[in-house]
Length: 82
Image 1 (cartoon, rainbow, N blue to C red):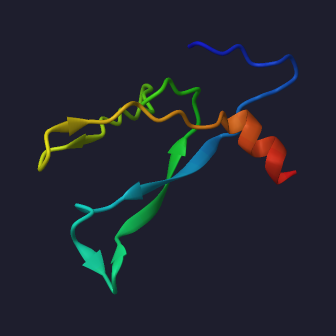
Image 2: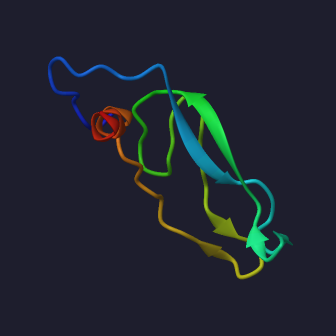
Image 3: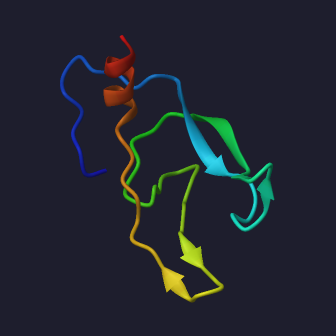
């Protein structure tokens, strides 16, 4: 899917991503409502986009389509935490 995993590096079983849980204009105690969601790990294309997730960042109030985000590989995240 774009990047080749180094030998000996395996994906963790899952990864935790933070999502905006509701329209960003809706705030709770002045903050945007977010949620941490655990999803099965996979290498993701920009967006992020994969088998289980496909994020399209579009602001319907202004008609702006934002560039796809690039998340760190779960292998890289795993090595930072060790």
